[in-house]
Image (tube, rainbow, N blue to C red; front, side, top):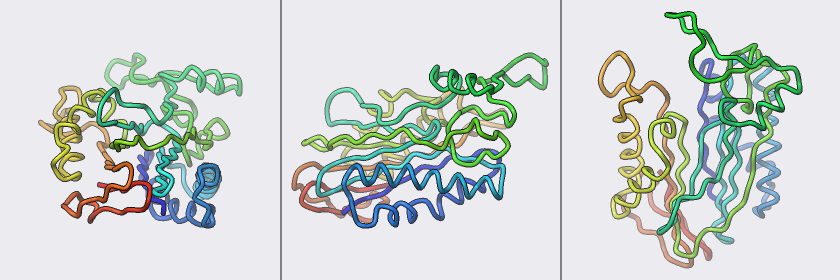
Length: 271
């Protein structure tokens, strides 16, 4: 049994993220064709992101970052694939959180900057409307996107890469929490703060814990918009997976996920 989860953060309109929401998980299920081993799931994620990209560039210039998580309950394995900047972190019961994804923002990824420049891409900061001076993150032109990997973004052309970073990790024997969130979360608070928030709410429903992460991000000073208090500048989506290791059965308490799913290896609640 496999649990699939996804965060798709659109830009340039909602067409790309909605397409991913409506089709991508079904594509992966069909591509895996009943084989839930890690290599099959990694291959399915890669093929289906490429498929979504090909479909999107024919109909829209919108784009979307995507982070996919596939949890094999029987084997106790997490397979993660991402394009863009919606990060995923594993929060163990003790110790430091473990990053599961790769950052594809041009501002922070030397590898992506080098790849794009070798292809002849133009990298520059946008100019402020108020001052006319360079401002904001480094962007790729044409298109003006801040990340070099996504699905869609037809106006950026061949420089955008839909090939994901993929990895598979075992679920810790003591269980863990996996949090996948859009950049509106990670640009506001550190992963250590997210981990502390989740650990402090371990006995609360998962939905409340995920909401607390969003609230903490929005409450940070630089997450405010100019139109009023608690107006986020960016999308602040948080997906939380609570995973119990071993043969522990998941409870049926509220958590936004409608109860746990279980098998011989581990169990999971998603919110």
